[in-house]
Image 1 (tube, helix red, strand yellow):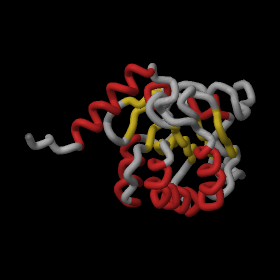
Image 2 (image 1 turned 180 degrees about the vertical axis):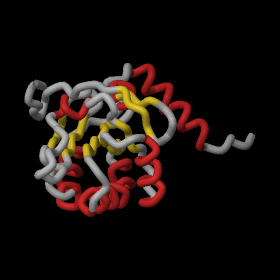
Image 3 (image 1 turned 30 degrees about the vertical axis):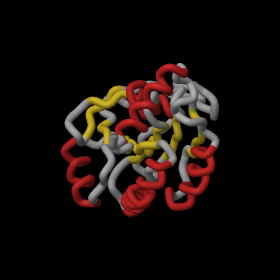
Length: 180
C-alpha cells in the first residue's frame, strides 16, 4: 500500500504514454513548470465537465507557471478520442501500470462511482496543493490559483550569471539597433 501523501511530500514520479505519442515523466516536467495532475476514470459527465473547466483555465494556469496533465487508466486511443472530442490542448496520459495508486487513487468498485483527484506539484517535485478525492474542478481552480501565487519565480534558483545572460539576450534581441 502506498504511503499517504500530504502537502510538502515528494510527488511520486511516473513515466506514462501520452496522447501526444511521447512518454512523459513527472521529473522531466517539474523543473520547468509546476504541474497540475488530474486523475480520473471513465468519461462520464463529471469527468467531461472537469476536463472542460481545466481547458478553460489552462491559459491562466500557464500564466501562473503551471501545466496540466490528465491521467487515466484508459487506453491511449480512447484518451485521444476524448481529447479530440473536448478540444483539449493539454496531454492525457494512459496509466497502464497503475501509478495512480501511488497517489492514493484506486479504481472504483462496481458499486462505486469514480472519484477524481487533483495534485499540484511544484518545481521541486513536492506536492503544493491537493484534493483527493477532488471536488469539482470548477470550484478548485481558485484554490489552485492561490497556491500557484506562493511559488517563487522560476529563475530564483538559477546562478546570477545565467540570469544575467538571459536578461542580456532578451534586452538585446528586443531593442532595435541604434543608428549612428
